[in-house]
Structures are given as C-alpha cells and as structure tokens.
Length: 290
Image 1 (spheres, rainbow, N blue to C red):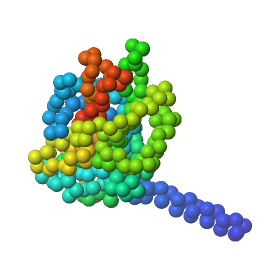
Image 2 (tube, one colour):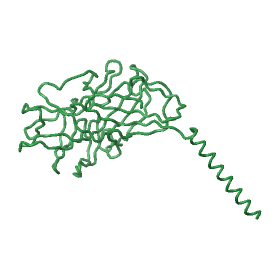
Image 3 (spheres, one colour):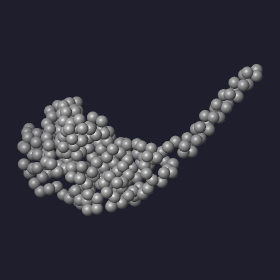
Image 4 (tube, rainbow, N blue to C red):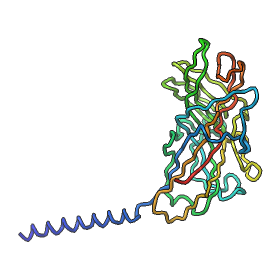
C-alpha cells in the first residue's frame, strides 16, 4: 500500500512539473521569430531604377507575369536613407560559390518561396534591436507564367525562369519537368522559357534589368547587383523584448515587369517574330509589418 501511494505521488509530481513547463512556454519563455514573407502584386506601382513611376518604353511592350516563386540572396534592414549598402542590419545572406569561376549565387542551394509564403524565419535574438526605415533585397531568381502569341495565331501560356541576380552558378534547373543542364555561371538577365515541353533560353542585354532604388542619390548600389530598396510606411522597430513573432511582408511589383521589343505592334509577346526579351526586373518593393 505504501509503495502504491509513493507511485501516485511520483506521478502527481511529474504532472505538476509538466504543467509548470507549459506555463513557462505560454508566458513567453519560447523565443519569438522574425518571419519574412513574399508577395507579388501586379497592381502595385511600376517603378524605374530611381524609384520613380515609369511607363513601358516606347517601341517595347510588356505584361504582368503570374509569378509563382522567387528567391533572394540578401536581405538588409537600413536605419535611414543615409545607411550605405552593407552597413545596416544584414538578416540573410544566401549561399555563394566559385565553382563556375567568379563568385556567384549557388542556385542549387537557394531558398525559394511563393506568393504569401514565408521565405525566412530567424530568432529575433539574431536581429539587432533598433528602428529601421528601409529594407534592401538582392533578388536572385523568379519564375512564373506569361502569355505568348504562336505562329498559328493562338495565345498560349509558357513558364519563364528569370535569373536576375548579379551572377549565378547553375549546374542544372528544371522547368515544368524539363531539365536544362548549364554547369556554368550566368550573369544577370539569363532566362529560359518552357511551353509544352519545348524550351528556349536567352540573355537580356547587360544592365537592362530594372532595379528600383529610391535611395539612388544617398545610398547607391553596384550595377548588376539587383538590390531592390523599399521603405516601411511607419518603420520597423525591434526592441529585443518581443512577446510575439514579428512578420514582415515584402510586396514586389510585377506590374508589366516582363518587357520585350515589339516587332509587330500588337502588345503581344511573339518570340517567333523575333521579339527579344529586354527586361524582367521586379518593379518596386513595399515592405510592411503585419
């Protein structure tokens, strides 16, 4: 009988201990995270390299792709408009390699996320406490559907892969099940297009990829870096004492971001007519704190 009572007491003590542990968790003992989500908005304002509203260049045409996923290689919070690139709070740096020669983004080790999906989650303890007005994101890759006009007079849907990072080492990549071996570095503007199992690839002109930076005068970025800059409406404050996760959504403008030279002046992308891709850069960034 005494042994039975001892066992009961032991169980009760164990249950009490578990209960206390759970209370500690619910009271904030579990560390909170900074979560970065991505959003692709075809209605967001279309910006140029200086962060100013722009229209499609005369002689070109453009459409808003249905972006399905994206990858970034660098994310930085900047306290002010005078904060130089690289001197803010760097919260993410993607994998890089010299396997292809020069330093490049390692595509095979890249992180991807889709619309309204989390791209990054890190403990808030890894983020320096402070107030941040701007965010910089070095884009690396985007993939989505576009429409094109075929020689039969009908419009079809194809999938476009855009490598917009400064330099990317690609061993191979897949578009809708079609595998493309590359095994080399590709500079900003490399692209591939797939439709019905048929794949073509190309290279946009050097320096043609739009990279909006409203801080062009106070905090310039290197050409070809694809570091898009956006301003928080009311800033982002990290106190270091957060009791909830901090969720930041990065909304990228896809407003007529896929642009080509027109051969037939009809506003339709016709690769068979010799119309060339000239720009696939995202057209602005608006960060927000959810």
